[in-house]
Image (cartoon, rainbow, N blue to C red; front, side):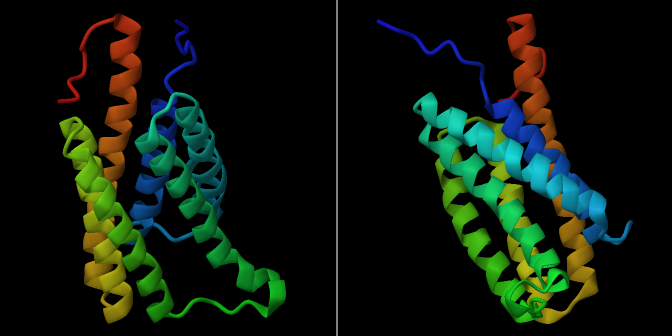
Length: 187
C-alpha cells in the first residue's frame, strides 16, 4: 500500500487567499487606495499560489481543497484582469459597470455558500472562513448594486476578518504539524 508523502498544500492556499483578501479589503474598508500592490498580490499570491495548492490537493484526492483553491485562485486572476484589461485596450474591453460587478460578486457568493455548506463537515475555522467569505461576496455585490460606500466599507471589515481567519488556519496547520500537536486550535 502506497502513501502520499507530499506536503500538505492547504497552508499555501490559505495564506495566498488570506493575505490577498486582507490586502484588498484594507482598500474596500476605505483605509487605502486600490493600487498595484493588490493587483500583484492578486495575480501571484492569491491567484497562482492557490492554483498550485489546488492542483496539489487534487493529487491527494481532496476534492474540496482542489475545487476551493483552484476556483478562488482563478477568481483572483480574473478580478485583476477585470481591473486592468480596459487600460490595456485588449479587444476594446470596457471597464465593468456596477451592475456587472454586482452580478460577478453575487455568483461568487452563491458558489461560496455551497462551499460553506461543505465545511459543515469540517473544522470551525474552515466554517468561519467560508461563512465570512460568503457574507463578504454578498455585501460587495450589494455595495455595487446600490452604490453604497458604507456597505462597501462594512464588507471591507468583514473581508479583513475573513482573511485573518484564513491566515490563522494556515499558520495553525503549519505550526501544529511542525510541533506534532495542537498548538493553535482549529476546532
